[in-house]
Image (cartoon, rainbow, N blue to C red; front, top):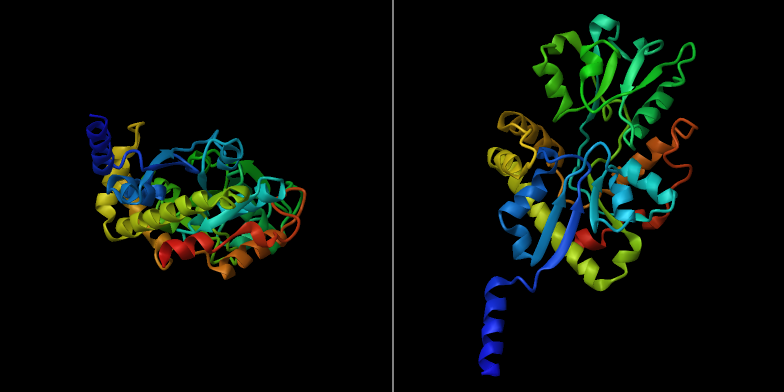
Length: 330
């Protein structure tokens, strides 16, 4: 009888794979939206299950800092921008980039021409909207490149701590605001402003390259072979999800809407977002390009100041690794 019970239990385990699944908690940088479509697609299409992973995707929000979540043990892996990750590492949270799904940059700046901004030469004396919580570092790097002070003094600019919306531009509280190509820029257009009424600046075109939406873990965890293996499988399945999303944007958008528990996301907007996000993940396979890392570091070091406390020195060699992505993508 015991043998029969044991045999039945093993058969059930083999059939379901439930006991064999490794749990992974992924903390997102922001709310459920197409910015993270690859992970939701990987979950919905069974790519994580194929890798024997039980992945819990934790949405972010304005009061959630992924770097703090992982430092407190609330996540195994996070998505965040490289400037925020490097700043956290310098301050004692040993984050390591294990993969870089986003190859290209979506951070941009949009300005109203009717408020006198047609080029960067028009910035002095203007109020500029900037996201904080780690998103401000690229802005300060750009201002340093332009030689502009950011304390509101004559000849410089005044910084408005921008909410995560576009109201400051619509209400003319700021001449320019921060936008992502895949989200807020579309909101500005949807609100009725036309492209010809706006001046658009891409940070990348302005020579400020900073990597966005990488995957980061704590360095000490990578020393555990079992954790490293789990992350290898996670990256492999996630990149499969990203490439599927690129090739099937409409389906990916629907998957994101279905995953959104707030009910706030619309299929129309998520379809627009997915089309733009696909441009940012295209051209990469998930492995961090060392040149992109060096460009990000150079941009941040060029802007070291009391207003931009991102990093004060070049990061050590442990800030990124190819060990996980190489194993996942071979």
